Image (cartoon, rainbow, N blue to C red):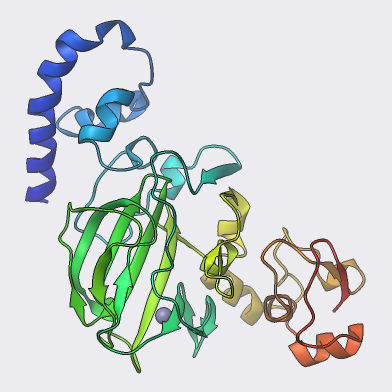
Length: 313
Ligand SMILES: [Zn+2]
């Protein structure tokens, strides 16, 4: 807390004199914190209301327009309701300011996003050996780098593209909070700390504090991004990505188990392959198995799915 205030105070000290003679005419350019300013008219004002592009890259934290705050205390500040405007948001994963994307660790997935042993699993596990190098996925700034309960030693980085990435169970952390990192830079060594059985990297991608299935963005076969941009639908966070709500529906009643955004068994037993789908994902979403899917559709489990392909479930 102290650190946040100190950080903000330093920013204020630097920014106020700069802005007073720099760009007064631009006052209405991008003032996103109007509403917020009424609520808290103290130190917060500086970080939420000033968004002058030329100053941004030098002094502000990454994606400050989107997040509005830089919280170094909580691992996932819940900013989603407050900050997600509209029904969808396009995340441009790579831009001119970025050094690209690097796989945090190139290995095999040992556990996917979803329900696991009666617990929601908000990341993707990648098997590794303790001591293996783990690197930053995108350019950004380290927000958290310390031991945190179930995560064990964890590094959380905020990126310029609006995402945050989480690297957990590390045996050693090699970066510090506030440190600027570039894609591919070593940030820690893989391990087995926290709630972990066997060495692996627990990798999460989050947007405004909410976890996204990393496999929707990352191709773990090719070890690259699936696309250079990614559209996030607000409804996904109430269905596809909200594991607790999916689980609750499944337990309560199957009749309304299917999230609205999916054409499920309700449409006469057919589904259409969406971006990022695998047989496993389709099977899980429709409460069936890969074997059953293959049987019904006369395909092999290794079948490469086409976007928009119709499958019997
Ligand atoms: Zn995990």
